[in-house]
Length: 102
Ligand SMILES: [Zn+2]
Image 1 (cartoon, rainbow, N blue to C red):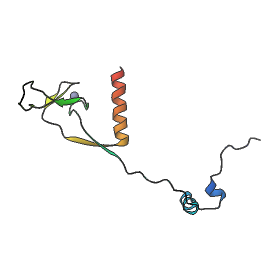
Image 2 (cartoon, rainbow, N blue to C red):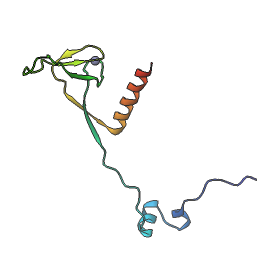
Image 3 (spheres, rainbow, N blue to C red):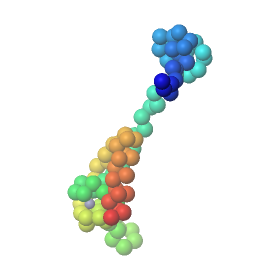
Image 4 (cartoon, rainbow, N blue to C red):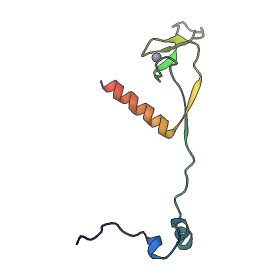
């Protein structure tokens, strides 16, 4: 007969109803919720790339006349910032890294 490798958590062995109660009783901190980090970024409205920037006129003292995407050559007014949480942000950067690797 095989021995189960699953270890009974301490809080059950100690007779508590939940890990939170056990943590409270033992003075250990229960897993706390981390406040979600938000990322604000500007992306190309056409291809969703972050590789955008202002169009430089090359002349000093002149204000840039818009934004451009270095990936799909989109040009236009300054795009609005989008907000991403950490998960979405990581997914997005991962996806872009994969695309660049091809
Ligand atoms: Zn683009």
